Amino acid sequence: MLPEEELARLLPNLEKVTLTLGQSLSESGRQMSHVYFPLDSIVSLLCVMENGASTEIAVVGHEGVVGVSLFMGGKTTPSRAIVQSAGQAYRLKGQLLKNEFYRAGPMQRLLLRYTQALLTQMAQTAVCNRHHNVDQQLCRWLLLSIDRLPGDKLVMTQELIANMLGVRREGVTEAAGKLQRAGLISYHRGHITVIDRPGLEARVCECYAVVKLEYDRLLNHHEVM
Amino acid sequence: MLPEEELARLLPNLEKVTLTLGQSLSESGRQMSHVYFPLDSIVSLLCVMENGASTEIAVVGHEGVVGVSLFMGGKTTPSRAIVQSAGQAYRLKGQLLKNEFYRAGPMQRLLLRYTQALLTQMAQTAVCNRHHNVDQQLCRWLLLSIDRLPGDKLVMTQELIANMLGVRREGVTEAAGKLQRAGLISYHRGHITVIDRPGLEARVCECYAVVKLEYDRLLNHHEVM
DNA sequence: CCATTACTGTACGCTAGCGCACACAGGGCT
DNA sequence: AGCCCTGTGTGCGCTAGCGTACAGTAATGG
Image 1: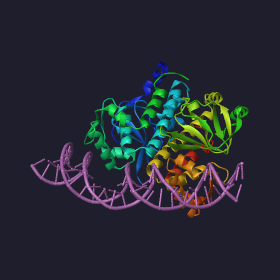
Image 2: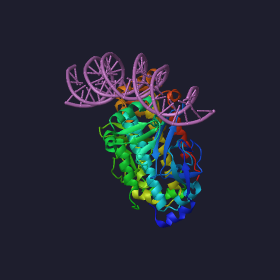
Image 3: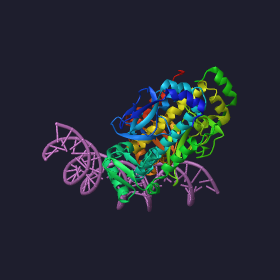
Image 4: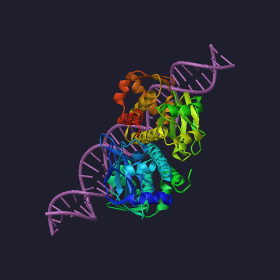
């Protein structure tokens, strides 16, 4: 989405890395050395509490960047970034991104619009956690995930999904069972395949659409302010 | 917190306005004409759903600004901003803030750090909605509110608090009753007085401290990156 | 090939919070 | 005074999700 000039300046510094499932890109309160631009991987931003319970507050895929705190000026965040789906990503030294950011050009505007989209995703996650049941939240989570993946399959155990959603594993089993019996997904020991995407969209709560529309609005056109 | 030069440039354009309880500063999807810097007032950012249910996703007081979407580049947000506690605020034409922002000076860095603090508050709200009970959330809400007010009193009915927290009014009645019987607050027809602040802090969940520490870290020193 | 581990399904009692209904009191109004 | 409206307290049945326990089955590894 960047003009050639910016892209040319950045490309030599982008390093392609492989992210493995469960890998931590950022720990609470620790400064990241690099920012990551997922390609076909997905990264979850998690809040972990003192007792170990966790909740996903946002998910980042090829549309975004992990490490906004580096250019936002805070350096650290109180959340963790965990690879939710293995794959490739570009990474870039934090200082280089910051330099680019402070050129105050298209890259800065893009990063800021992305950060605003992230704000919306977090806000909607808060609402969803409050008002919607596990079934709907699972649908939202599945849709947000496969939107960020090339195919319709994802590798993820119910245990991990439960950690992301901040619910019991058994709750996920039940919700996933319903979806499977309804023929919307097939679930097999850590491998999920989405069979009927429109069916999922029919069951999901409004939160998914709110987030998706906002991402489209903010990121899917090259308009310069 | 700004150097004199920046302050001198902004001051003539700041307009002092009175915000009344319940006033809307921003509607979902509408562009704001001004940004607001609360002085002794408090503004709640709310997500409102299709069925009318709502949830507060963040609270803004004298430490912050209402309308980050104006400089983040998105122009609008899918949330509402409602005055939760009447009082004074400065307002500033959106375009003037944007101009100041794009001077890429101390004001930009400050606004970005504030936005990051807002991110943290939203994230923690999402976690709190998931994992903590109404009692704890009420304590968090009370503390976040009186931190942003000059005294120890706030004007707020249980009905409105329920809307903020996204719970039933009766749930708030019950939780507030416990706090009152414990001698931590006194509640009288829409007038709350905090009597024992340390007592509240002892009951609140960790979410309050996480948010408070992050605000302090990001905003309470003049360090320039 | 067997043992172990990891993942999924199911059951059961418990609790927090919901939806609803209603009683009661303060405070302002005519 | 009487009245209404607003705000608060309470009770009751219901449900979603929790905690816990355990069974069954696929993958894995020696």
